[in-house]
Length: 283
Image (cartoon, helix red, strand yellow):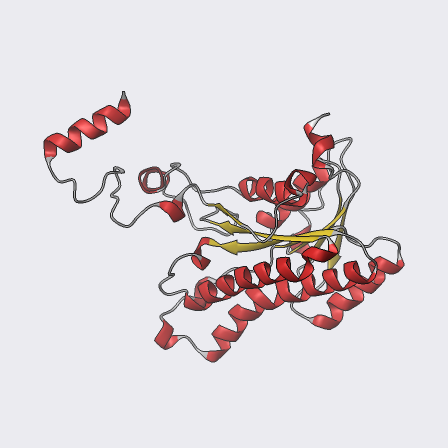
């Protein structure tokens, strides 16, 4: 049996919420369609969906778009009603909506209530609404399902000057685990991806040399790296996986603070020992 057949994604209806912009959501939606899934790409920005909905190669699945604000209950409820009435209930859901705008960075003491609420709405409420509505229908119709929440390694660590974002993503991981426990008996699997630094179209310029020194795998992530993990978690290959977090971060979250840019502990300060250890690594 081929890997595609074992994955079981061909013909499955998967919704990708936050699919516009040419970044992670776009990559997830198009990769799913490429392996034969029937994908509904959802975003609140119609023009941002254009790169997502570009023509696919022959043999791909279907790829449609809907403009909906995923942070608002009424439009999301209407979307579910419309699609279900048309005989297209979702089999899987990927919640991509989130992020931290550059003008939202700031220390805890200077963060306003408006910023805090906006960050929480974008990074937590959208995922709450979409997954709640998905599970509600799946349970009522006795259909199994699979959900992937996009979190961040900021949820696993501290994030100076991005506390609201880190708190929202940490809450998302707690929500995911609770969903997995509550909904497991209904055949609904829920998992999360903790994304590291991913280079997307709106990212600032990349310092490739610095990334090579600092990140264990020597580069920033690409949207396709997240898409690969999402496809696995949505597929039958992950049929016994629920309530888990996969860090897709090039090893960033496991690198201790006491390891310097050469990969050696800072307390290894003997020049001869450092030369020997680094030389052994190169042999």
